[in-house]
Image (cartoon, rainbow, N blue to C red; front, side, top):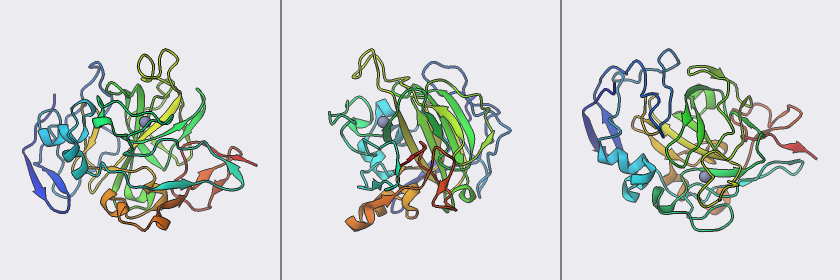
Amino acid sequence: MRALGAIAVVAAIVAVAMVAATPPAAEAQMGERGKLKGGKKGGRKPTPPGGPGKVAADTNPEIIGAFIPTRANLDAMRIRGFLETGLAPVYPDDADCPLMTSAFGVATRSDGSQRSRRFYQGRHGGFDIPADEGTPILALADGTVVTMGEGAAIGGLAIVLQHAPEDTGLDVWTYTEYKHIQELPPLTIGQRVAMGELIARAGKTGTTGGYYGADGFSHLHMTAFFSTGGEYEIGHMLIPVGGQWMDPMAFFRRAPVESVNLIDLPEAEKSVPIAFKTTDGRIVPEGTKVVWPFACVPR
Ligand SMILES: [Zn+2]
């Protein structure tokens, strides 16, 4: 059963959904076609100041417009950080990393074609890194598995990690979603994973039968969110309570993570050297709390 919370929207620089306290459901919605499964209680699901809450994601138009792909409202999305930031990865000189080919918020696919307006008004909800089927996908940071299953319409199979502030060194809670994975990994909801750990393998689930035809397009699509507290809702997709969209590149640049602040950076500060793990197991640079979601091959 979905618990409904009373919702008030507070306008600040950004509008943040504040949720009245209701106990989290013992289990999230399970098994409905096209929805993410998981959310079983017992994992690390912390209580933010003000008590636990659930967002009525399916009924609140603000939330629907900001996060549900097929009912996107560009204004609601922008208020929650769905903006092209201009951040661009800088790859190492001494290793070959799978390249990001379609950035967060852009209107084009990896091949340069225009995205379908059926989803998010034709804007990209994350970033894409093409990779052969079966290529190991690495956890971007230490985190907890919060859901996995079949994503809404465009997602295929997906796994979502929640990262506490201490996991990433950022001062907010963050989420990384890994889409189009080849199959669901042998992980359990609530399980902790380590930065750089193999959590899934690249695939093309959710990409066949449409623009990419019967062959599909094997790649990792990563979506990221942040929020000040660690509560989240699982319905059509995972939605952090009071959450914002986040350019996954912001993990590598570090704070600020808000899209509105990233947009205003001087161009020179938008080139972001990535941290990564090598195929022989080295972490570069030492001490990083985030790594590229694919290993890089030393030259
Ligand atoms: Zn994508």
